[in-house]
Picture 1 (spheres, rainbow, N blue to C red):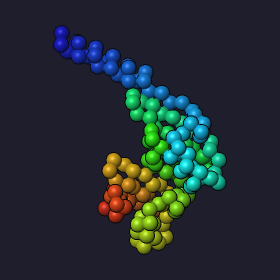
Picture 2 (picture 1 turned 60 degrees about the horizontal axis):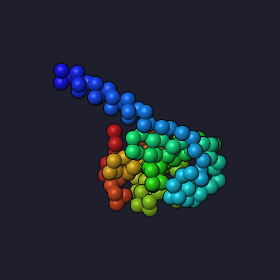
Picture 3 (picture 1 turned 120 degrees about the vertical axis):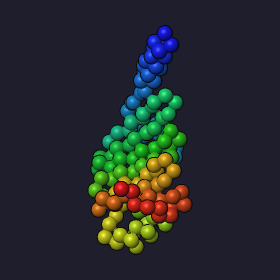
Picture 4 (picture 1 turned 180 degrees about the vertical axis):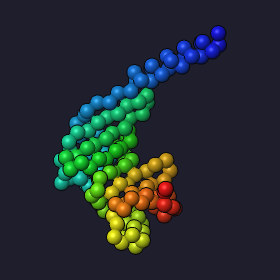
Length: 145
């Protein structure tokens, strides 16, 4: 009996969570101010293709796709989560100085194509396939396999 009740509650909860999940296309003007400022600062020369607002439960995230194919992700407050420029270089101005310096010294023939925060660490993916991890002070920690 308890197993049946637990299974029923689990199914009801998962149905509620999937019903609460909403993805919708929005305009750039509907982004949080911090995200709009980021786009105007670092991607002003690129045109926005679309903006997706992703809601799951109480969490909101935003994904901005540009005509160039670049992609930027923000959290619900508009803070940067990830920049993915495919095989092109991430705009250097948005990278912390310590990261730029480390990559240019250690990998002079490479550049960063992806930059973002994963849990508590920042990650930089290079065009040569290496993924570097940095701590919250942007100090190199390790190469991620």
